[in-house]
Image (cartoon, rainbow over all chains, first blue to last red; front, top):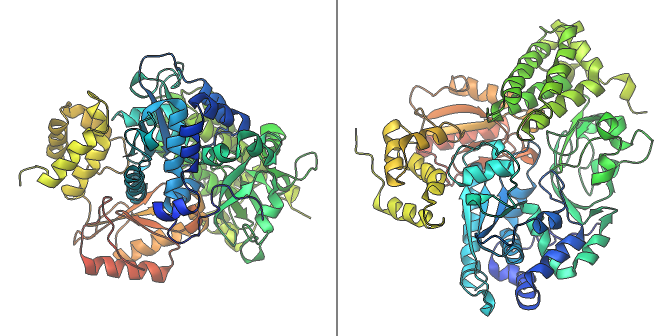
Amino acid sequence: MGKKLLLEHVNVAGIETLEVYRKKGGYASVEKALKTMTPDAVTDEVKKSGLRGRGGAGFPAGMKWSFLDRKSDKPRYLVCNADESEPGTFKDRYLMERIPHLLVEGMITSSYALGAKSSYIYIRGEYMYLLRILEKAIDEAHTAGFLGKNILGTNYSLDLYVHPGGGAYICGEETALLESLEGKRGNPRLKPPFPAVSGLYASPTVVNNVETIAAVVPIILMGGEEYAKIGIGKSTGTKLISASGNINKPGVYEIELGVPVEEFIYSDEFCGGIQDGRKLKAVVAGGSSVPILPAGLILKTAKGERRLISYESLSDGGFQTGTMLGSGGFIVFDERACIVRNLWNFTRFYHHESCGQCSPCREGTGWMEKVLHRLEHGHGQMEDIDLLVDVAKKIEGNTICPLGDAAAWPVASAIRHFREEFEYHVKYPEKVKDPKHFEKEPFISEKYALA
Amino acid sequence: MAEVKFSAETLLLVNKIIKRYPEGRHKSALLPVLHLAQAEFDGWLSVPVMDYVASVLTIKPIEVYEVATFYSMFNTEPVGKCLLEVCHTGPCWLRGADDLVAHLENKLNIKAGETTSDGMFTLKKVECLGSCGSAPMLQCGADYFENLTTDRVDALIEKLGAANKRSTYMKSNQLQL
């Protein structure tokens, strides 16, 4: 069993209450930070820990904190991004539902480090039931003196609020989230200025993912250097992986970064293998936006090394033969899954979620969806495959926010690795008109079939 | 048409929500208040309701319209008492979301996007609800119903019908499957 830093007590009865959470050592990071450390010392520990943003981009959290404009005379804000909407990702939901005080504790300790007096948790509207759970935890923390005026008798005061979204994937992008928190449409902002200088209400703001903020708790308790010893190389600490798709045991797993992908898929400690003992076809390792990899390339890198779940190993080979850790949304496809149908599905998602500001994304995602629809339904032509590559290229890098890239990468990677499957759809239109074509007649390209 | 006005209890809550944001930043309360409005006024946001929300928050009606039409949780058309939102994004599709939608269409005798003639159910296909590990699933108001099978979904429809309550995001229907 690997180390558990976030979910260690997740199965303890009553852990969602302050009383039980306290008995398990809860809120010790608040006591330690507020009573024995300066705000800058807390930031230094986060820097030393090597913690990288757990929302998807993997940007070093301590560095993001250090960019916060502390000279400004405006109030500073910490905003937690709980807008978890990346297909394949449900770890933040699990953490907030099962152990809500961990997020509240992380918010207090982190807000202290950043000098925030009001902090917000922006949660996707669909998780409204979690908003109640968090508000209850916040009320309990208030009553116990961990929130409000003069926390634990110090001169630090903080108010913490939960704010619901309205159902929009784009609000997971930090500047769209801030727009939404200001009561507007979730249109991403042009950067610079970055939120660290001009964020919420044009004030210095840090936006961090739920898991990132929760990880601050063990970092402060054990110290950044100790935390950095966990994991592998620059992938320090533990990571919550949301496992879904054609596996025996879908769910959220906390792993020490560096677990081999093969072990993660097949070991009973994690996914427990592929449903009904079928063959593995492909994996999307970090949420729907990251490049899909065929079985051969997800288990081993192009150089033949064992692929690990870490930032570096998953991206080994760049986009030609690698992918990204992303949000840790690990979606597994067996031999009966149709890559073209899945891609049409994902592309429909991005088209639906495009905010519409930038033409390449607004129009391009729609064009790709239409072309994929006709391919999947047996009306495609060979030229359509390169047309998709062309449109994806013209979206990538040409939009204000990364949603354009997120829509382009799955298309480019699916065609890069599964071109034969796209050609099959053109060659056998009658077969693919049945939506369950590969369920009846499993198909894996010989090029990537596992021995 | 009945007068559009929040209950005294909701108005208190609205004022509490406005205080979460700095002075002069009351527009921030728009999304939470729209959720309250939708729950209180039959599950959707009509123009009079949006105008009322604008007056409560002292912002322009257009500021409400542009937000209400942007976010997928806000209905700008009437919906049935129980809005069944079936996730059909990739991971749910891998675990049988298409079959679930087909079963519901058949059972309720409507297509996705439509409402049953008795006004009880609206069926809607939606994008990822963060329930990929317990797929296939649907959301009805504040409740997630997960790991659905044909039998479980049949039982759900029966119980929702018998309870005959409007589903809202603000409050669980307390149904056990």
